[in-house]
Image 1 (cartoon, helix red, strand yellow):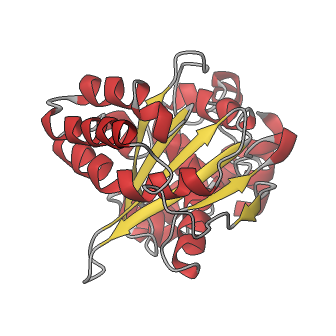
Image 2 (tube, rainbow, N blue to C red):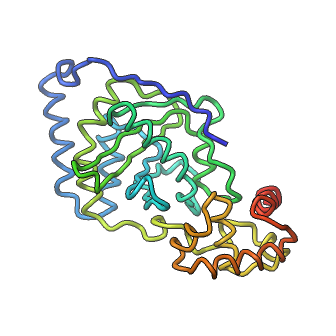
Image 3 (tube, rainbow, N blue to C red):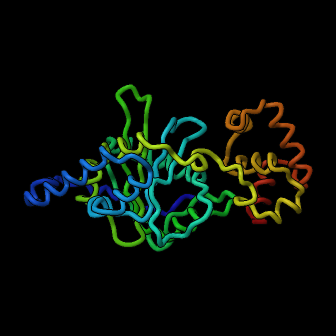
Length: 275
């Protein structure tokens, strides 16, 4: 199921600088300059939660990078405000949504844009996993998207800010375009949290342990069926997990037998209905 999002191209010809006083411009310069001296992740988050909230308001800030046309992205929850749910952030479940956001960004000329999700919030595709991130996204009402891509197209990053109240407007998008190079510089200098980069190995946090026990699934089998639920092909699963195509097929045959199903569609249907 796709997120019920109405894209809003809210960019205008408004000049971000012309509407600000010299004092405001000096403050803005100081906020941006600070990012050049941020030594670690905690300092980056303090920067984002401080004066940067005036220019880039957010309750949740996510970054994805890598080959958006390939089989796997890398991810980072850059910032989560304290009043949002905590727990396992299975951010890899955002893959389809982030790829749609990236496609839209490319289509409109690689410009910052805003979206409004309405009262239902941003919904992830049904994947059979439970995590704090999915619950948080349901409470988000608006998002703003911008990215970076080098001239050779070899390096690409996408940043998405979410907020639970209010909408992003044209000045926010303009500020995002000015801020993003500094934010991207800061993020490239710090070490990312390993558990956010790829699908977590803590299976019991993603799928109900009762489901695992009832179907007698091993950790590896749960991992494979999760990727099946995400729509990955056998070859893609093999590439992600470092397994041969033959090994993936053998795992799936055992999984189908344990789950008492005969194909991938039935396995996904049972997984998503039981959890």
